[in-house]
Image (cartoon, rainbow, N blue to C red):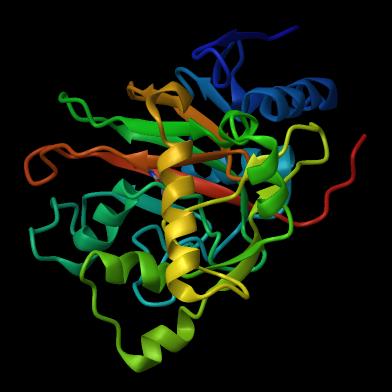
Length: 290
Ligand code: OGA
Ligand code: MN
C-alpha cells in the first residue's frame, strides 16, 4: 500500500491518506511517513480512532522514546495518570469544564502563544502528535508556522549573524509574560534550557529558526537586545504567508515536527464548549537513520 501526501499550504503541511495508523507497523510505511515529516513538517491524518494506549504505542514505534515533561507537569497532576499523555483539554478530573479562574485553565491558555513543545527542557520535544477526541461545534483551530520558510526568507547578512546564537528557553518566562506568579521553589523546577537558534534536521538540508514564546534571552547578549531580536524573529516567522490553520474534525490526528514548525491554539468560548485532545511527544534524542 502506498500513501498519498496532499499539500495543505504552499510551503509545508500535508494531509495523508489512506492509512489507519493503529495498523501501521510495516517499516517501509513508517519510513515513508518519516520522509513526509521531513518534507512537510506537519502531517494531518483523518479518522484515527486511537485509545490512549494505541496512541502511545504508535508514537513509540514511529519516532522512539516518549517525552514526559512537555508542560508544567512538575507542578500539576495529569488527568490521564501518565505524563507521556498530555491532557490538552479544558476539562478537570471530574469531567467538568474548568472554571474561569482555575490554574489549569490559565495554564492551558498559554498554548495561545506561538511555541514549540518542550523547548524549555533538555532534550526538547521532537514530534508532537495530537489526537482530537472531542471537538467543539465552534471553531477552535490550531495554527502552525513554517520556520524553514521563515529562515529562507531572511537575507544573507541576517542569517550569518544568527548562525552562532544560542537561546535560553523557560516555561516560567512565557507564563510570567501572561501574569503568572511562581513560587521560588516552582521557578527552580522550571529553570529552563539552552537551545541553538538555527536548527537543521538530519533528513532535510533546509535550516529552520528554532523559536518559541519560551525564548527569554540570547546567550551572551544584553537582555534587552536579545529580547528585541527574539521579538523581531517571532514576528517575522509568524507572518500569514508562513501559517497553516488547522480546523479540527473529531478523530483527526496531527503530527508536527517541533524543530521545523511553531504552533499556537486560537481562542474559542472554552467556558461553554468542551474540547479534549491528547498529545504524545517524542524526545529529541539521537536517532539511527535507515
Ligand atoms: C499542544 C498545543 C494547541 C491547541 O498540544 O502542544 O499547543 O490548539 N495545542 O490545542
Ligand atoms: Mn504545544
